Length: 231
Image (cartoon, rainbow, N blue to C red; front, side, top):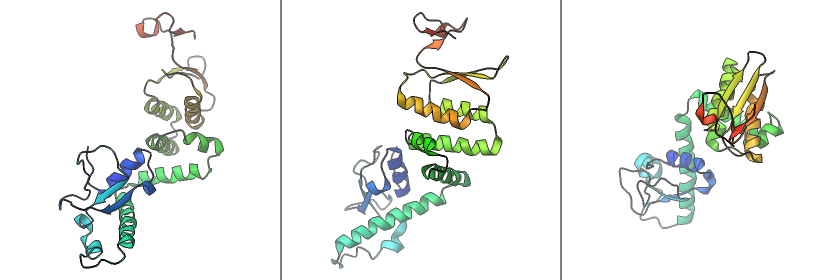
């Protein structure tokens, strides 16, 4: 899927782990009057750090005199100014396209970074991707709004860990069984711990199963020899 707008490119860059500071906008040597970005590969699905832009596509009134062909002075300064202004305009684009919920997510993630939720939460959040952080933050906001801890715990776990299955045993006691379907290692343990610290209802006991599922009668996939854990 191609990109045509500066704001679209910055979002894609963040999703690829790049910082806005890594992206440099410069005046395209040749460009289409119908496109804002002028990549060598129109349908490229990756982000290059040096980006050629047609600044006249949407911002003609701002940039019409910046690169006048008769002005050959301070070219390097004008190129830097173009980059700064396009970054600023891209941020305006993004804010205009955001709804109230997206602002709340940004505010919450900023508070986590500022250590308002404690060092443990702040440090563990660094293990997640940008999209995963947004999933957690959105469900924390929904938790404040609805108080439905268990539903949001289940939703968060299933969206972050694709093979995750949760079982609730509440006939005798509030007990949660979690099957992760992946190897147990330190980073994944910390990720799971953050979700549990955030959403697990008070009083629930939890048992986590990693690679091997516990056996369930009449469910063939869980009754394979050497791949069963005892519950």
